[in-house]
Image 1 (spheres, rainbow, N blue to C red):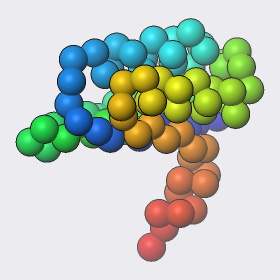
Image 2 (image 1 turned 135 degrees about the vertical axis):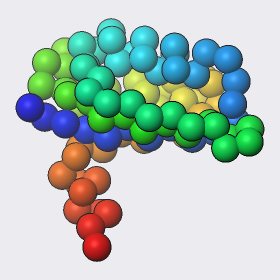
Image 3 (image 1 turned 180 degrees about the horizontal axis):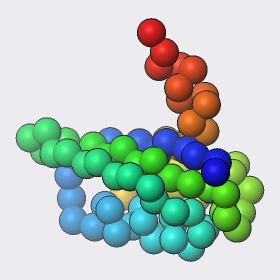
Length: 90
């Protein structure tokens, strides 16, 4: 299993989850866990995904998410789990 972490942050609005999960589904990426929270009017979401069966290169997948982020005015970042874990170790 190849796992990645996707984070999403920005102003809350209708359709955020739908737009992002559409890209994820089109690229054949499996969402393993998802957590989203609304802090007043700030939307935050963290997803753990499996990219083992992804049908595009990881760089292209990241670009697709960033493109959607620009379209909906959200900051979307995807990184491989090992990099995320390394950056957030104590």
